[in-house]
Each structure stands twice: as structure tokens, then as C-alpha cells.
Image (cartoon, rainbow over all chains, first blue to last red; front, side, top):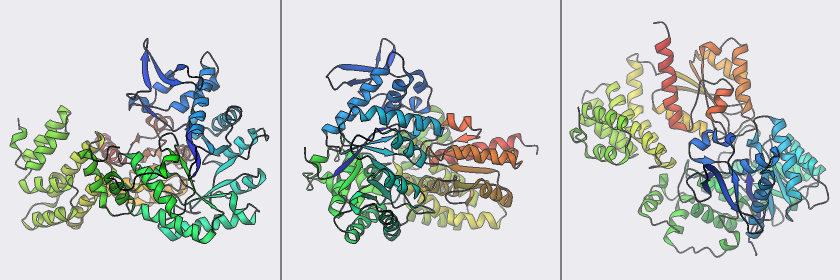
Length: 339
Length: 254
């Protein structure tokens, strides 16, 4: 399947949730389970452990399913193999839908650094054996990232590092040491960028720091930082214009990516908004995305119908033409945006 | 007992009928809006509609017509925001709409605040807010600040990447009874616990209420590290701050 984007699949994150009332959750003989179909086509069910039911998420109607799978697999016991199968299925689904990297983030598995690092080491070793795709090691802690890289066999393909920024330049040294392609973000040393120019300046600072270390442009994935348009509709143009400016400044070799689904936080019809944003980001010069390829199918993006009413409403909020997303939400309530 | 039909303002009636479902909340809102002057009901309706121009205009008119600033704030602005909070909690409205309501609130408060402070009415309380050490993500914290200010709190914003010392300095300088800490990252969240420990070491823990929030934060985590409360979003932050301060004042010797 051809994808117009280099897709960094973000599905194997411990933050990911399923809705308890959704189709994947079921109660079988009084036991709460997460249903899935293994890569061999076997209908299976992973038990939701009591630890996951004592959480606020559970009470509010959600379950962190990737967390459950990793916990179950790492703890050992009768369902350990099933936990591994669950992860294998998630890897396969992303392979099928066009992911180029499998991004792994376990930051929420534990409050303690040792717990996070143990989980990252385990997950890297486990995933290396079950996917042909290169991994992407993702954490907001450089030490967690280091733990992931140390666990690699070194025999596989080049693993991505996600991410480095001005406040953690040591991650760039790690990327250099492991010859890793690296996501560099536009976060500032002292805060998040406000507007277009600070994004470009921070990102340019990162590119310069990477080049100084001998990391080539073609190994850099710049993330201009995508903020939710629900909070401020100016965030859409900020990000898109920063992408345009970065492409212009650094030419065709560098990669431009980002956590695209952030854009739709706090508003319904997220897939619609995400898809339209991806199309606009590509048009502005992005050639990569940190995204869920199972929900937003990368191969379909190039053919997204841009003449629909739904497209227009979504484009208007992203391009700051719909104050407070008022028209968008009105249309959503009328059912006009169902896709 | 007041009935829904006793409320004069049609918008308020329709809002309560359509969006408020818990019996105790229906009773409270019906009682409140039946008692409230019609002008206040109209202001509340403007808040619920997120119409900042209208709230600006109606608030000015109400003050000119001789209504007390406190009445406008309690029966108009805050009463309207109460309905907004319920609608958001029940997923009837979304973040952009809540923000529009908060901006409408701000448009009203701008006329109320100077009158309140000139007449010696203190803000509900001063709240110190910041994201914890190592955390640069402040969108959520800024929303909380906007809501707190709109609800009558004075807020000292310490920004991002706030050290325990900076929190401690601010608590001492402003004599603030509440501190709000936010973290978006699991890896910076433990710094909330460390900051609370620093409050203990500085001998401040008894005098300050600590509330925490941010995407990875949960009630369990808040309890574990000894915070006084957890809010899951900006509106929860406001009701938590109110609860904490009321409990503190109830328990404090007069």
C-alpha cells in the first residue's frame, strides 16, 4: 500500500484507551475482557485485571488497553502469552495500514523511572521479534529512551528516537551514538512556542544542533508542535505556516512530521478533523506524521474528497475561519458531519 | 417549591429542561433562577450562549440600573457558568464553547471587579498556579487560570517549569491559601510529589491547600502524593478550589 506520508504509528502507547461501552469490551461469564482477533485469525479475549479496574479511567468508562496488554505480558501468568499476542496484533494492524515505524511509549506504565525503563526494555525486545518494521522509541524522558536503545539487539533496522528538543539536547547525542533518525521538536528551552516564528526559530536551532553533531538532514524529523484548535483557532495556521517556512528553509531532504491528532483534542468528529489537517499539512510541506494509521488510513488521504460539506467545515476551523468552532459544532449537532 | 415554569427567561428554562438531568441540580438551578432578577437571568443566558458582547452590554445596564455588583456576579455570571459546567460535564458542549462562555464571563467581570475591589470586597481567594519543574506544557494550566479568574479568584501565574522554591516564594509573598500544580507528562508528574515534600520541609504544608491536575494525573495519584484535591479539567479546577476554600474556612476558628 502506498502512503503519501512516512507514518510513525502511535498505537502502542500506554495512554491509549478503549471505551468500556464500545464494541471491543465485553463481559464473559462475569469477567470483563478486551476482545481481539489474533494475526492468525483466532477470536481472543484479554482479561481486564483488577488493577485496571481500580482506576479513575475505568470508573469514567475507559480502559487503557495497551497498558493492560503490557502489564499482563510482563507479569507472567496464564494470560502472559495473550498479552504478547495482543501487541503482535496491534503491530500487524499498523503494518497493514501503512506504518513505517512503530512508535513505543510506556511512560504511563509506572510513576517510577525504573518501572518505565523496565517496561521499555521489555517492549523493545518483544517488538523487535514480532515486526519487520523499525521501531521508534518515544518518551519525554531521555533516560527512558536510552533504556530502549540499550535493549535493542543492534541487528535490526535503524530505530527512530522520539524526541529531542532544546530542553533536552542530550537526546541528540543519543541519536548520534545509535545512528538513529530523530524527531526534533519546536519546544523552546523555556516554554512552548507562541506563533509561527518561535516554532521556526526553535526548530532551526535543533536542526543546527543536529548538523553540528554530524546528523544529516535526511535523518531529521522536525515536529513544529501541533496544538488543539479547540483552545485557539489561531493554532491551526501557526502550525501550517511553520511547516511551510521550515520546508522553504531546509529544502526537500529534511522530514517534517508531528503529532497530528493533537489538532482535534476537545472537539467531536476527531477523525474528520485529523484527516483534513493531515491533507493540509502535506500540502504545506509535511512528509511524515505521528499518527494512528488504523483510524486515519494514510493511503486514503491523497484521495480525500475535498468538495464535501464536512471537509469545508473542518478546513474552516483549521484555517481559523470559524470562531470558537461555532459553525463546525452546529453542523456536527445537525448530523451534517457524519462521515 | 419553585417550578421550572416559574423561571421567566425562556432560554434558561429551555437550557435546564434540556441539559440538566440530576434532580438535585434541577432543584438548585430552578430555585436559583426563580429567585434571580430577570436581568440576571438574561445575563446568565448570555453566558450560556457564550455571547461576550451581550454579556458586556447587559452587565453594564444592570449596574447602571442600580443592581449590586455581587448580585450580578452571583445570580448572573456565576449562575450561568454553573449551567455551562453541567453541559460540559455531560458532553453536551465542547472545549471551544466552554472557552466562549469563559470569555463572556470575563466580559462581565471586567465591569464587576473594579466595583468589588473599590468597595473592599476581596476576591474569593488567591491561587498560585504553575506547571511543575521540567514541564513546559501550559495550555491546560492557562485554561484553569482563565476559569478561576472568571469565577472570582485572584490568580498568581508562575508560568511553566516552576521550581519548588518559586512556589514557596509565591505562597509566602502572597499569603495564598491555595496552590495549583499542573503536569502533562508522566515523567514530570512525580515533581508534584517532590514539590509537596518541599512545602512540608519549608513548614508550609499546613497553611496551603494543594490541588493538582493534568492529562496523566488521577485522583489515586493525587491521593498518593498527598495533594488535597484533583481536578480533571478547568471547570473541575474551579469547583475544587471553591470546595477546598469553603472547607478550610468552615474548619478554621473564626
